[in-house]
Length: 316
Image 1 (tube, helix red, strand yellow):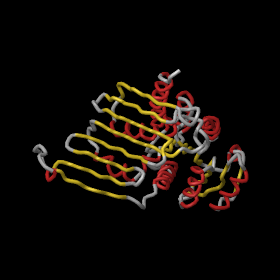
Image 2 (image 1 turned 120 degrees about the horizontal axis):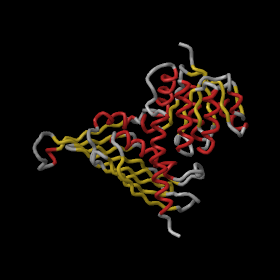
Image 3 (image 1 turned 90 degrees about the horizontal axis):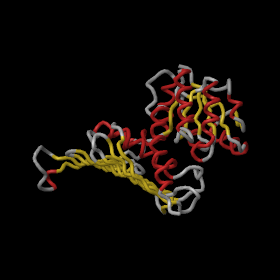
Image 4 (image 1 turned 180 degrees about the vertical axis):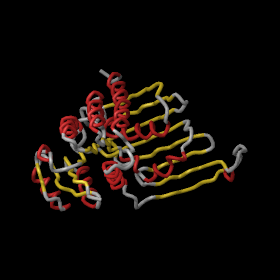
């Protein structure tokens, strides 16, 4: 099987990692890295052995079959539309676009041309999530906490679109149910956008999700706790570990001995590499993307609703 000709557009911190993964996979022939800062593109191209370093993504047309797009969200639509119009498959970092209308146009164009459009909701490839996905049955309450130190990047979007959208996607995939109500609040602290936010989401199946995200912490924490009949899962997405607790039988729990505890750790797994591998498999005619453009658009739709609620309740 011939390798897919690939490129990475935008080689800041995330794009640089994308370039490393695409360069390492035999299914990929990394043709170029692109960045508006040509010096940076040349450095990354040298690091990963890509023959071309470019400062204009339009130069990729005719040279590649698929790209990973890791530029600021505000640029996703313009770049992705041109690539899709020219028959190039897309892996787009989350969020898929800056608005639902833009996302819808990208999805429709990709589908009309039979192209792969995958959104980089990386936590779907976190081995801790992979390990519990099939074990989550009828969740009743989900608690998510995602906090990170302040960094002067991704400030073109609020913390909802920067961080919380990861957990919005996870919660929606795990519940498999339609939303019925959202309450949300948040505040700006260090930036001109929302830096800390909380959303409480109710679903048609009765599940309630409490989702908190902050980018002004002094530490990194990514925890997901799932409660369902007869079981509880505590997932450390940062450390890639799962703690699960289940009833041993059908009788009510009367002591700790009635609870079966299990611990799993996946320290060596590489979610970004697995995401790239899955994307290339889809491009080669394999299974459809785990996070398609439509799924990415639904995560954006919910994130936009939360952002709007947060904005309207800001103090004067």
